[in-house]
Image: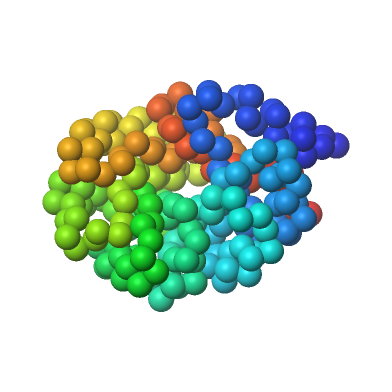
Length: 222
């Protein structure tokens, strides 16, 4: 059985230097996360606000916490004091809540707009035109404590790599279209979060700058 160090080196070496690795640590124990942190990993992704809220005080303070799950508005308050990047923002109403909580804490919170690219209706996300409209009309007066850092997408869960690659390329095309507009509005729109353990390689080939990897790092859950 491969060790954590071997898995970490394998995953990291497969990624270009410019691609950020987010270690998906949902349901993983504090000791497992600390062990990966000791190897040099700093970005960790969680899906559940309550779980993240409980883990965060027990772990090194230089960890960058990424919230990668679907986020309900009434749960933003649990992660607002420390979250580094929220990946799955899919409505202006959620942006309003993030702004409210960030303003109360006098801090800025980075976000990615989640765009629906998969064939499954069960996956969340904005339609392409909805994401485009939010970026094109970004309101720095309405959301001064929110940084628009890019886009996130989850591909269809399929063995067909051609479908997955096509979906990622579509999102990359939207990203390339919107980035100059967002940057002109003063937003640090440089992150394209695509790819998980099963499709990270395809995502990187399509232009991803950030991948979310869990089982390939920590091993399968027993």
